[in-house]
Length: 289
Length: 325
Image 1: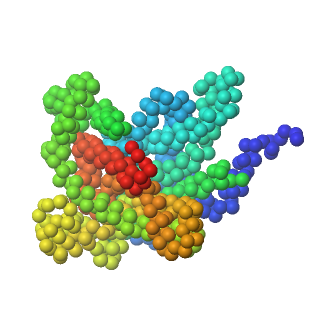
Image 2: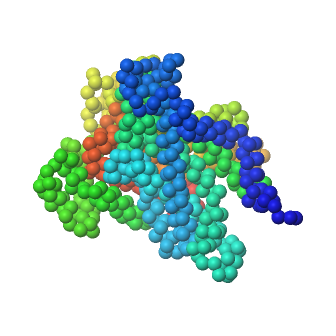
């Protein structure tokens, strides 16, 4: 058989994943939700009917109607526009956090699993310590220590999420390092660092993708919670959690204020969770064929 | 025994967060408007001019004596404050656990028995919503519906203002009111706890349901269940006695883990429902950047969390005699 890109095993595997994904209705539902959210975040600049920050005090606290589908807030800003820009912020937080914690956590876990022994013991005890705090509590303490700002909140959430990835990758690394091809790499003179980078980590990628997708949902929830208690995005940033925090004061008379941002958090997180669950089934080599 | 290094690590981490990360802890305690002299005095008084290892030893020896520092906001020892607010949080958490198990286990069992049929689909949708729900938003929506629109349940606090708090026996109003012999007060306290407890439990309810469902499905596929069926034992007895008992270990694990996370979730729930517990206390402290209070809360919660996980480990040995320590 002549070599062609189409016959490359990686490409065929990707095609198989795509086909399984299309056959799975919940996965597609999750994907569609996320694509809509993503499109909204990217095109908020053109699609949003109003400026999300500019005040318009003449239109304070108007109920949902033809001009403002989701109503307006106490400064007369259009809630629909703010929610659309909010998608930008929340998705960005989610991806940055998962990128940092997934990257660091995977490397830490791979090192622990591959070297084993004392290195493993020390690294995993440190991870145990981080895991012995409820995630929201530790993120809150860290964010409070560094001072209330969006970047500090992102750092705090990323820190809390590292052990999740480290644990997962360590477990996989323990299994992968016993495989014959690792021994083969070693006798052909590969150094440890090269083996971790080229063999261990790529073999853990599927599980990391699944956990990353599920963690994106969790991250968005925790980041919104931090903003809600005043430790994340600061007003007037149109962040969903921060909007609910202010909207809470108007809950009894202006129900729309807190309701719509929350609905968007819920929908986005559902998207990540059902896509992550479906991916777990699809990428599991024991189930797929 | 793995507890000891973990507990040591927990104190180190809290110490690092409280002493090493903030630019200047003395300034933090003194507040933004304090003069340089005042900051220096605080630095001396709290020993913050000493090297970090020395500060750590002082910090831990304070902990041993139950000293978590003094609150910046009300100048009371943080331990006293947490002591006052702990019972309310405990009551809320226990009520939530009761809902989690009381509703989550039956839902999980039904879902497993009627696998891939209508009740199962319903339960799965219910639990996807649960794990994706922003707790604080759910609380607001519950308030909007049951307090504002329907007027069925009260919106905040532990008791109506026309009732005086019950005599302090356990600190749990649901028990104290009964000890006092005041059923009217008991029902009032119960009506106050329903919304926050449901709000707090929903996420973990979803998790418990999922775990019970999947472990039941696994057990139901095993040989001894087939044998029991072949022996003509009633299906209900098979499900409840044979299968459920064997699916308990994952359920207990997840309940233990949830208990700690519930303490975290209480931060949001208590704030929404004006529930005077540790969670509301810490959010109020965050607004003042009352650092000793935040750290005291963090440390307390993690100690409770670690102890519960230890308790769960011990419980395994009772549930499954094959596990020995």
